[in-house]
Structures are given as structure tokens and as C-alpha cells.
Image 1: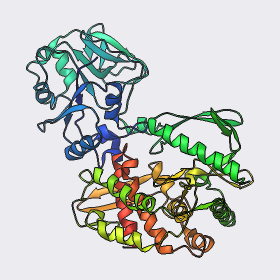
Image 2: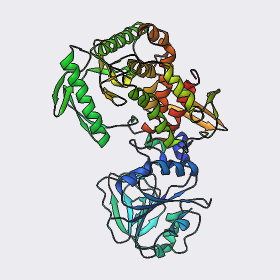
Image 3: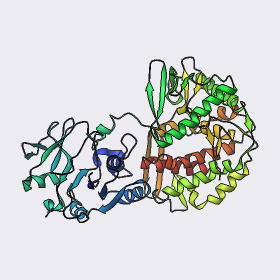
Image 4: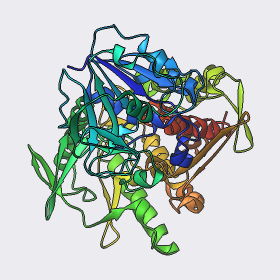
Length: 499
């Protein structure tokens, strides 16, 4: 096991452009995990000494909230280059212990094995590096096959005695005449450039399942502990629908073990860019009618403990975890998109009172997560509901039907699905926040939405729940700092309309 790892996480990450506007580059998410956290995942039992400077406070609070490993965070002394902070980090190492030194924007291949002993240098085999190492010689020439990939293993820290406080680490190594064994780094990747990041497929905030796509069916397998819990609730939901109704707005289920369902030939609602106005109105009306049919499958008594958990307790618990992480969260008001918004941390009692104003007279059978991301339209424009939540607060299958209407509103007006794909622009500067979310293209149908849902539903309640749902997204989307902050600010922005 690699016991000690120094991570060079300093630098402004200017080559990543807008991605590092609000955070250090080591927190830029790659495949739904901050770059730095890929190292944590690969070496969960190691002790990390992390060098930071740019947005140091963001990194500090983020690690306190989510690191899950042993670490020390060292602030570099303000010098320039990849040498900055290394001298300070070495102070925390035992004298005779081997250690790794690695750049934070290097994502190591899962099957890369690093010897426990010896002096090694990581050599790129399929990505370009500015320096090369061949036949024991460093050269300042770009290379894809012999590139110096930003990973070094040393027998002890004495080998770096006299390391300067600024400049290029590799250039300094060149002057030291140290010899290394080469460690080929096939399938590893460096993400220091925006162009490399933009080659990645868009990732949703929280993937819990692996999908195996066949010709006519899809098999879903949970990939996390939380994924297993979600899968159990989802299976129970589909079984209940099949047993209790002839509801036909769901995929055909072929098997529950393994969980195999019909592959819907169509697309998610938020991808429907080509539909004209009348088609959109028809689809929205069909979605709402489908939810009404679901709600009428069966009803149950209201559980007020579940209402409080879903709308208040869970939200406050999630927010408390990230309060110190979010800029301006210590202020009573925050200006968001030129609107002065009350900060929920100072108005918790008002929120609780507002939630209590709206009585939940009866629980009904719910979908629980009917955003556009979880509704598909098949070739005949028929909406198909997928990925049900299966619970509400402490209650399985049943809950407040207004929660479904708020979740749908979350996509129609809130454009959640584009936010979930990180298609938003967040600026946190000079005491103000500006956030723009790419449009799903349906928000102009807000009036139609309220005309179509049951006339007993309070418009004010739907807007309140919409704000609460955004606030609850904060730690659910923990893998991306911008998503945490963006969800919080959008929650406050919408909450201001109803408080």
C-alpha cells in the first residue's frame, strides 16, 4: 500500500477556463467525481498531503465536508510553478518513508499498480506531456509515448532535499541527475485542458445504476449501496403498479431478477427540441393525465412525520452539511440574479411555518421523481414514466400528490434537467451571484401547467415545494462544487417568491 501521497493541487487551472472560475482545478468533476477524489478512491487507506493555493478556502471546506480519507491541507507559500508548496508538504513526511508525488489533474487507470518500493516515474503512453523521459534522460520536448505524466515515487524525502520554493519540478529533477524506473501509464489520463474535459460525455449529478443496453431491453444493476436501496424501492413500485392497475405509461417489465425492462424507443422529454407548440402542449397534458391516473391507483392516510421529513427536516439536514462551503451563506440576504433573497439559514422558522400552512389531506400513490429526466416520449408521442422514487419521507409508495406536481414543475419551469447535466453558468463575485441555466424549452407553458393540474392544488404551495426541492439538491449533487452552490442559490431565488 502507498502510505503517503503528496498531491500538487495548486495553480489557477487557467487552461480549464470557466470550470475553475469558482473552484480549484482539483475539484473539477471528471465522470461525476472531483479529480482529487479519484485519488482518494484509488488509495482509500493512504495519508494525503494536499498542496493548495487558488480558492484555498473552497478546497478546505469541501474536504472537511466530503473527503472521507486521512489528509492534511497545506497552503503553498504563494510562489509560482509546480514546485510551489512541495517543500512545505515534505515537512509532514517521516524521514525514511517512501511516498508518491502526483499532480491532481492526473486520473489514474483502475488497473494501474504502483510498486510499494523503489523510485519510479509515471510515463504516458496515450496522452501528450510537455516533458519526456527516455533512456534515463529528461528532455523538454512533447511526447505521447515517453511523456512525464506527473507521478513520481521516491524512497524517502531526503532525495528532495534542497527543493526550491518555486519553478518547474521536472526541470529541477533534470538538474538533480536522479534515475528512475519507468512506470507505463496506459489508460491513465490528464485533464489539465478544457478541450480534454469537453470530450467527456455529459454526466448527471448522481449515477446509482449501471445500464446494460440490449436490442429490445435494458438491464439495470445497482453500483452503490445507495443504488441497491433505490433499486429495491423501484422494483416494489413497478410490482405494485402491475398488481393494482392496468396503467400503461410504464415500460414492460420482463424480469425482476435481474431487473430487465423494455427499451423505450424514444427520448427523454428534455431532449425534445424539435416538437412544435401544439405537440408540447399535448405531451404536457398527457403527462399530467398520466400522473392523475397514478395518484388514483390507491390512497392512504396522511403521515405527518413523513411530510415534515420530506419538506423540512431533510432539507435543513442537507443544507447544514454545506453551510460553511457555500459563499455568502453566512449573510442574512444574498443578491441572486439581481434579486435580494433571504437566506434560509436565517429564516428556517419562517420556512417551517410556511410548510405547515398547507394541509396534506390524503396520501396518494406517487411516482416521486417525475422530472423530464424520468419521463420518455415514445415514437407515438406517448409519455412513459421511468425511474420512480418509490417513497416519500418515511412512507413507501404513498405521499403528498403535490410533491409530484412540484417535481414536474421543477422541469417545466426550473429547467432542472439541464442543470443536472451541468449546463449552467454560475458567477460568484463581488458579493453577488448570477446563475443562468440552459432551458428545456417548456417554461413558457407554466400557465398551461397550472391549468391542467387539479384545481384544488395551490399554486403557492407548488412554488414553495419547488424551492425546497432545489435546496434539497445541494448535498445530493455533492460531486460538483458549482452544482452544490447553484442548487442553493436557485432554491433561495425561488423561495423569495413565496416567503
